[in-house]
Amino acid sequence: MKYTHHNNELTIEHIGQSVFLKGWVQKSRNLGGLIFIDLRDRFGITQLLVKPDHVCYDIASKIRNEFVIEVKGIVIERESKNKTIKTGEIEVEVTELHILSQAETPPIIVSNDTDALEDTRLKYRYLDLRRPVMQNFLIKRHWITQAIREVLVHEGFYELETPILGKSTPEGARDYLVPSRLYAGHFYALPQSPQIYKQLFMVAGFEKYFQIARCFRDEDLRADRQPEFTQVDIEASFVDQEDVQALIERILVHTFKKILGVDIKTPFLRMSYHDALSLYGTDKPDLRYDLKIQDYTDLFKSIEVPIFQGKSMVRGIITTLSDTFTRKRLDQLADLVKKNHGDTLAYIKYADGQYSGSIAKFLNEEQLKSLWIKDQHILFLVPGEFENVSSALGALRIELANELNLIEKNRYEFLWVVDWPLLEYNEDEKRFYAKHHPFTAPVNPDDLKNNPKQAMAKAYDIVLNGYEIGGGSIRIHRQDVQQLMFDTLGLTKEDIEHRFGFFVDALKYGTPPHGGLALGLDRIVMLMTDTTNIKDVVAFPKTQSAKDMMMSAPSDVEAVQLEELHIKVSE
Ligand code: ASP
Image (cartoon, rainbow, N blue to C red):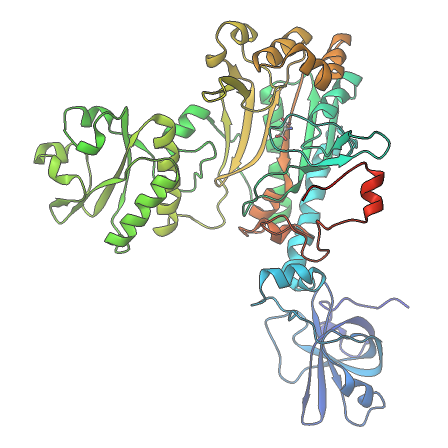
């Protein structure tokens, strides 16, 4: 028989009712002969009471944590009430009790707080996921996914699937390959994204497509990255950049309202890629705090500061002085700047009418004043080239915001980063790479031929609180332009034929203008559940070294399997 209530439901109103409950034993304790059991399910906890004179007292006294039990009983008012939970005013006096499953002492205590090591948690993930906080992450993930889906289905998008076994796609990361048994020496690639397939849906005339798609990229992992991750992959025909952006805004407005009750304002701010780098030092700025980068190049042209000599620019950030800025700390910040491709970190403090700091001595009073450093403030300066200075100051900006507690919780700052360069030139390899991917449309196709370094893309990224939560573009839909794009990327005729021949062909037969975007579902869930660890919102994540601790994957395989796949493993 099914239970009558979840374990978060019973209150004073149910007193006198007979109920049937199931769940896990959170805790069992014997107080002066009375046995109290906290019964847990995915919704909450109900307290059970077993009296010493009852027939099930013997069984009850054998119960340990994490046993699965079912009980019948009567709801009664509790003597000592617990106002922190909904069921805290009642308990259920047990009339019948059955043990459905026993449990050994679990290697992880099933409670919100844990001091278990991450490896242990991942090894016993099914127990880790029993902890209510962890359940909450995945249950929220479910509801967020449904909310996103609601908007897309409501707006007439078809949810269509694309193959997992495919061919290498050009998102720019390393592929996961799957050897073919039937064709020796040939491999499928797991999709880095369904990019080509979704564009082929447009060629096929579906017009509006989406998919909650698993993507695979064999890259070095970071706290916000997993080797396999989920995209809400979207594509539509006859749309321009504004149409796609407005759709994404509708999705996010609905989802944030429904899940968090938060009203987010649209349209989101638009900022060019260049401004993002120049003002915030990153293409994914966190706008919850200011700390803008300012340019001091002109000012220092006439001042001889040895470490600035020969550098093309000097830029900096002014912030309030903090007790934490000790000598040692400033050295650490200088290291951070170096690690992020910066040159040197210089600083000038102004406190109680006095200027000091690493380069103050090179400036006279008037020059110091022209820096506009307010009392109790400090100016950090980094000299160098635009890209290096930006990335160094971008990293410093984040560090300072954390250190000075400038980041407001429960605030959501969305931003579209637009006006991207189409291509990136690699000086070492003397060739171009697509900044987004090779299917992104140039604003002006002629630039591809005449002026590739200056060519701009119809691309857009969406950023939330310093995280890129999605990216997309209007696509090339003309075969000649696609061909030209591949040429510009240095692909030979054979390369194109071999890798993307089918796609270039497909564009020949009547392709509607189209575009789309992919949202990073894991990151969105991470931000909406206020965690900084992507693993919290992935049911069975891999470790930082790409291992599945529970299954011990990757693992070796039987020799016959390798033989069938025509694979010899070298030592
Ligand atoms: N396929 C792209 C990506 O994975 C997203 C898009 O352009 O729609 O980043």
